[in-house]
Image (cartoon, rainbow, N blue to C red; front, side, top):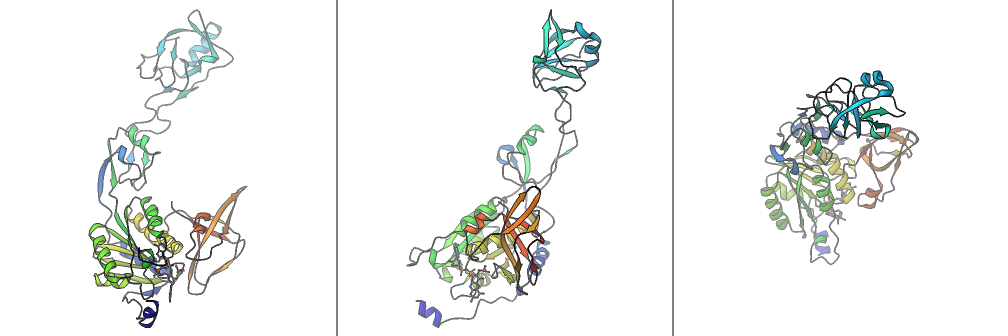
Length: 419
Ligand SMILES: Nc1nc2c(c(=O)[nH]1)N[C@H]1C(S)=C(S)[C@@H](COP(=O)(O)OP(=O)(O)OC[C@H]3O[C@@H](n4cnc5c(N)ncnc54)[C@H](O)[C@@H]3O)O[C@H]1N2
Ligand code: MOO
């Protein structure tokens, strides 16, 4: 089998689109293509189902929080000026207010017992904790503490006022955002539909008949990465080197997914069928191969309205290419603008030097540390594009553009890995 493959070596997979484009050109081609791709449709889900979804509306406060002046302590509420005037005689206790009660307005020269979370009577402007007061003959006396206006009061609107922007469109929702939505009385929230993605690995080394069997890794890696961006991912493996098998699988995936991602089989080897199979299916290349390391075989195609990202097979290359091209693409489906590496880069001083070849933009796994206000970025040792352990040691990557040199001590930008 090995002999026959070498003997019958055929020309590499063909594509009429720009081949071996520079990194910036690849990003520009993708950005231009994005202009014709509509945002994802919107759907309404209950708050209980909103975790992990991307918000498709701006949420402004329809009510303030706190909704009224609220006691922050179990104690006594009164008007400061009344207590000051009363001095040693204290103020008579006019009643008790618990959370959930609607108290009557505060009368002149009286105090109320009040519990944490209870609404202050209109007219009261402070609360003294019960351990800092004493009751004698039904009157409240202060111990050691002088009252001041605002003491132990959670002021109406101190967290936010009616009309304030609470959550912005495009926000990925998690447990932190749900109380805000619930507080605003929302039963449902507008979110973007999850794009359906099929991630397809291929290679006979992952099949049951392989004599030198390998463990397929990339579909797990990519599914986790893209699910965290709001996508619904299904994983498939074509465990053979047959173009027909791959064709069948990709055809099925096109029926079920909005976006296709392949990994492996996109280089120039005899069994790299991804490009030719997709071509046969009618897909057109946006760009074929990029002058980057890792990830040179990275190819993007369009099959009708559907995008197909053909990632390299080497796991670290697949991961970096997904971060560079697929994650910004997903971000763009819920935002109007395409931004490569939309995540905010972190600046630090390089602890290493690196010279990028004149024609290749390099992406290096790095570790970011902060010590006494000094940000450092160190190179994570890696044996190359197949290295999976280096990904666990790295917090992100640094781009060194083609022909550029990074020196020790230079300021550089780490693009953090998105989870
Ligand atoms: N003559 C040339 N050979 C290669 C070139 C080249 O330009 N000329 N490019 C090299 C580069 S760079 C890369 S990257 C690889 C990528 O090739 P493919 O994307 O076609 O990937 P495969 O050949 O299928 O696999 C490469 C490597 O990765 C392993 N792999 C593949 N898929 C997975 C997976 N899902 N999980 C785990 N590991 C996977 C596979 O077993 C191979 O070891 O091509 C170079 N060759
Ligand atoms: O470009 Mo490849 O991804 O280095 O092995």
